[in-house]
Image 1 (tube, rainbow, N blue to C red):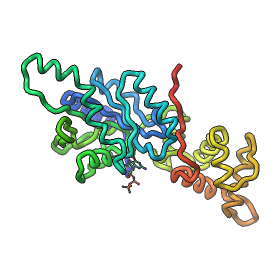
Image 2: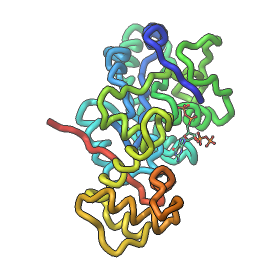
Image 3: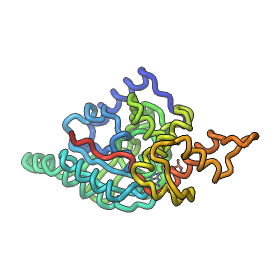
Image 4: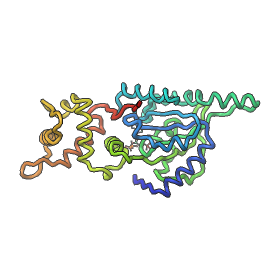
Length: 284
Ligand code: G4P
């Protein structure tokens, strides 16, 4: 899907989201469990204001479970509710309405004091494209809601979808743009497939993946490509070895680096190189 974000789009999307936030009690921010920080847009803090927050680490089936637990603790320390889910299978999603309920205790007590009838908790899902917002909404709603596409601004009428007895969800998510001023963030987004492949060079993405694995999971690398030894920091040598083993040659016996890079990226995205989480919380 083509997404083009321009300053005008961004400003409009932001304004519309601020309007929507007024209607809701809880902001549900969806992130990719493999890159829980890089798949955020820092603007969400500004948009959410003082509304209670639920962080959902989606695609947890693709991430390293130990690191997911570290992230959950980190977000809870920051005062958010946090859950890991797999929106595709529904694993973990049943806990969402209760988590939202915990976040609205104050609001409910307030309306009770005023003698108002209790009402459902209203929530909105926010996140960058491709984190699984539509999949999660459909999963929670138990039916297929048409995907409106990754475009800024929502033109269709808003509808509330009932989730169990206590929760209502806006049927269209808030779409934030990925933010990658920082090169490392861009590489993490690209490695997981969150941004289009044309944005960064595929060899650069593959080198980033290889460096990460050399440092964090050399065994996965060795096993996948049947390498007897790994170079400490000779990425070109490693590329050559992988290219040779996978038959990525061009005439004259040279390695086809583009093809090798594509294989590495594909293997990484399809978990042939393990369930990897590319970052840990920066607690400083
Ligand atoms: P969006 O609304 O935030 O843009 O994301 P969307 O739901 O369209 O999901 C983006 C892709 O991520 C989809 O795959 C979807 O199936 C996948 N996905 C969503 N949640 C999970 C999850 O928890 N685990 C895994 N492994 N994948 C998830 P796609 O290949 O683009 O489309 P499709 O062919 O699977 O529908």
